Length: 463
Image (cartoon, rainbow, N blue to C red):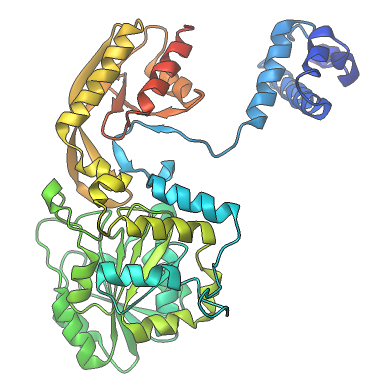
């Protein structure tokens, strides 16, 4: 080991070799020396651990190529576009909702220029960033007022902190949810300074449970939509209308943490368990909180809609500034909300809804086109079969969507190796492994993805 470590060359000696010196015509000296330093450090670690028993030829073109690859990897952005072939439309790990072109254009325009973010162009005085989307949200939901913050967790935290700090929040045991990243609703309630009062049982809670628990210290009745799980069998939950009566009679506030949140009915596409925001408000809920980057199809944001006096309290709370939405997300959200208004058809304009609404014939045709192209490129073991896709993003966990997928294997790759290789492609491809085969669900693929998929497989096969 010591002998190998002594054979590792000095930096200047490496820079003086012909092939490494040639890299200096393409890359900066700092890039080359940094890559060499990282390479030497990795070699030392491998020698000390016993994984490496011989050193590479430092004068070779192969070594220089490996250094160049390291530099190119360093130049590549950390956040990159990937191809979603998982069949999960709102994939949290893959950035959730794809944005509409109109939203991207709005983000580009506002990011590249100064804007009237907090300037009232009519009066010339300071304006409010909330005004750019508030009327749109109210029009689409029937709310008296609305407020947008940076995500739904912030919306819940702000709503509770501004209305229930130091007071009780009554919630059903069956609705004390945990969302992604181990964030639990009871922890959010505690962080708000409110006191959680659990009622009912895991599978059964009645309106009478809330009514009995209300006292002079109660500020909020909190309902949470269990969008990321289902309790089935011997269950019951109170109607929103019944809770609204209790809230009015006890002078408390009825809130609902909706989580995902849809603005239009999805039942025509077989998705019946996701309540529409406007229907929730009509049932008597005072404030509803939901995400802008899930089923709504916009950028990351948390939307609060409901009673004007309550939204006013939230706007004036100090936390509101800490969780406010930035100008780029605000521009993207406004553009997305406008796609829900005539003359637009949101099922054609909003990518998330378009992925849900596309016909099974369209999906099958896309899968067939990809399979045919892969076969024409020289792959033999390629098939198309029915599968099930999902909305994802913690929405509609037990409801799948009919779909078609392309399934394949490559003789020179195990399934795990193929998955890893495709993640390392110029445009990474993220799919599934089923029965030791790589599977790409065509519901989440777009027509624009297909040439990139084909190029990735050609690169793997050296063509």
